[in-house]
Length: 62
Image (tube, helix red, strand yellow):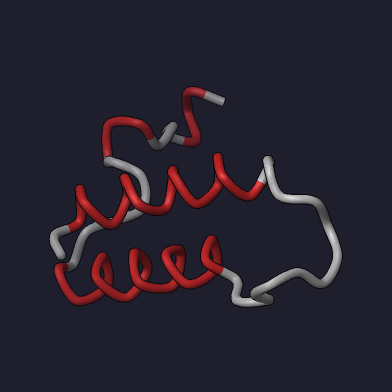
């Protein structure tokens, strides 16, 4: 799965998690956390930062 697909699946999991009632259910698997970890590992392997360089404010801009 490429990074865009992982990000899409992560967003779907976040959206769907809001629809599920809290507490023990049919599955206690943390799908949001699962995709977040996969995104983190792929970004690290690709050398991609979490935020683009242009988005990070310089100390002078603060």
